[in-house]
Amino acid sequence: MTQKRMTKQRKTILDILKSRKDHPTASELYLEVREKIPHVSLGTIYRNLNVLTDSGEVQEININNKFKRYDGNPRQHYHFNCLECKRVFDLNGSYQEDLDTMISEKNPHQISGHNADFFGTCSQCLEKT
Ligand SMILES: [Zn+2]
Ligand SMILES: [Zn+2]
Image (cartoon, rainbow, N blue to C red; front, top):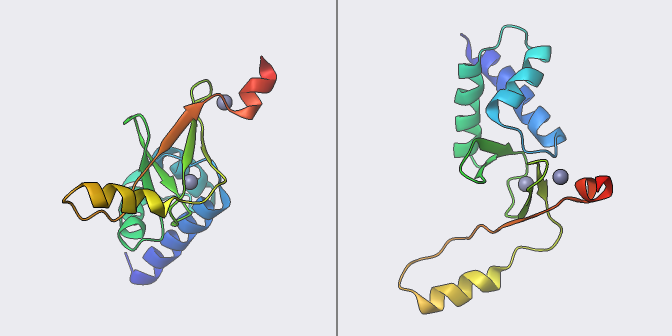
């Protein structure tokens, strides 16, 4: 496999991730990448996701410890987890740096960030009921 080909695959994966707002798992992403690159393997998807995560272009998120999901938005933001349809949404509202400071002052550890997962029923599931 040439370097050029790797780059093309990586770019395709990144483009798809950035265009999706549903925080897909690697397998969900694989289905879409395969439409563009027919002979791609799931292993290739994982390998590229690791590279993209290491370089900070993609975030790995882990909600309910089930499957790892991938987020094309590398900035710190909060997530909402719908308990009905199990989808993960980005939330409006800014990341609370004050919380890091507040917790830092009370603990001996060096804090570089935090995650907060909100959960409940999403607007679409609410409409159904
Ligand atoms: Zn829902
Ligand atoms: Zn997100």
